Amino acid sequence: MAELRILPLISSATEIVHALGLGAFQVGRSHECDYPAEVLSLPVCTRPAIAVDGSSAEIDRLVKERVGNALSVYEVDAVLIRELRPTHIITQTQCKVCAVSLDDVRKEWAPDAQIVSCEPYCLAEVWKDIERIAVACGVAERGAALVGELKARLVPYRGETRPRVAAVEWLEPLMAAGYWIPELIELAGGRLVDLAEGPEVVVAHPCGFDMERTRRETAGKGLTGRVYLCDGNQFMNRPGPRLVESYEIFCQILHPDQFAPTLRGVGWDFFGEGSGDLDTVKAAVLDENFVGVRAGDDHSG
Image (cartoon, rainbow, N blue to C red):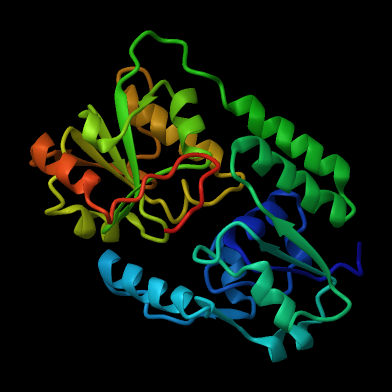
């Protein structure tokens, strides 16, 4: 494997590469690849084309302007990629907003590199992507073993209590979580509902936001029920090995009497009892800006 030179351009792929024991062969990263910590010293091959330090509403507006003008939300450093001489570039075709897409890479990629493109919409497809990366890098058996280990940790909750849960992956406009999140909530013993249905629990895990930024954004949104904050950037919104930790976070939130809060302060925290009223939330949900996303639907956040 000495000839391997792997360039993941999505954060989940970087985590998969390291979980497969291939971290020593990673030669660069995207600006969003930040785990495990040792990758932070690698050359950064991408950057956002918009300001990402604004509010949810501001980011939403800027993204829609770029996409509406057929422009990418990300920029790729083609010169640096050529200098790195990757044998494998790992990207995605799922969402042009969430990470560098296959279309971006095709314009800039090293001509001799093998492109491995991920496109997960559910847990089964996340596992397939792990195995696809493993096969491309010549470690198929490691891929199969890793998938087996991860799946074994997703033990379905067998208790009778199944609280109504609304999961939110963007706060302005409100966007309901989809893809693998409904599966994780069901496995963790929750019953997924919309915000307008009066959830007992609301979990906010905006794409790209850590918990402190989520805390600031959640304030004043008038959500109902018991509101929890999650580090969606590190956990729920990365389709890789740490989706298992995301499942564990949901278990700890939904069944605190049965699961020790081992990830509290790291991946989740309690925000408080929602101060809004259901009629106001229903109005927001019915507003034309609300985007409900379910597994398999187009993602726009």
